[in-house]
Image 1 (cartoon, rainbow, N blue to C red):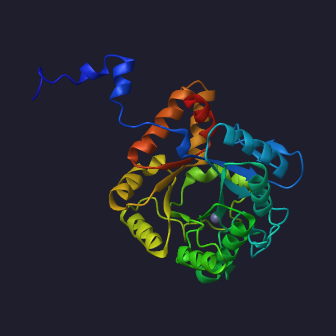
Image 2 (spheres, rainbow, N blue to C red):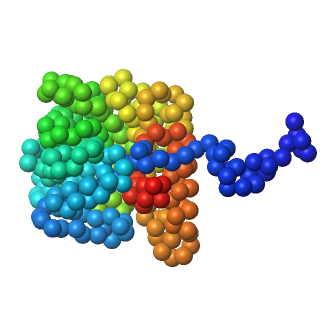
Image 3 (spheres, rainbow, N blue to C red):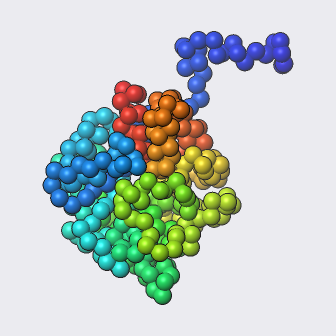
Length: 323
Ligand SMILES: [Zn+2]
């Protein structure tokens, strides 16, 4: 059937009708809210490149977590700013490391909120790389050992999900083995399976103070030009035991999310990263974009591409809008 019998505008004629035939819906219970925990007490410092986001000490983070849970957001993902850094990133696997302390506090004080532990070394290493550096290079297998220790420390602290974000080869299998041997066979792994070496992480590096001190991360994160390689990365992580796979960033990589949705049957998460958030907020502050509209449209596009879960700095604003 074609025009004039077919008139697609018929179903667009009112709010009610448009809502009734809408294919993609956002829901609060699919959001994950990223939080940055720092040392001290009573600290809540706004991150200048990410307005509305803060570095918070454990006590403030617990307060914030209560508010997040009350909004119906099911999960937070934690990033840590340690007191001190060293070449081997020991703060990542110290039982008293900053994320482990925050996890224990939130699990104790806030009912009904999942704590996801981002598992990486870059926030804890003095050189800012995601693994152990030997002769100026990030050494894969040694890094995997440290990451397994970090995952175990996070599970011991009570983390509900471990999310390795380092992009070392073989780390999902090693973390699975470590968790199983350590008595945590039921703690799922959400692997950053397709994580690209993206310029959109810029504002996060201010937030987590994790910029590499030399070189860049292109030796382990993916080349933005590659799609087929992402499917290989995801397939390997699935084989190694990942329970949820994650694509990062989100909006510049919707094709990766969509293809992953078609090729794999496990839940897919997407990370709307700091740069995606900050450019929308900055444009809105300049009067160039409508903040609310850009937020809804960007999140809808990520969901439409096939993401089940979305990590987003808009989680609170969006949850309030949906309630
Ligand atoms: Zn890292």
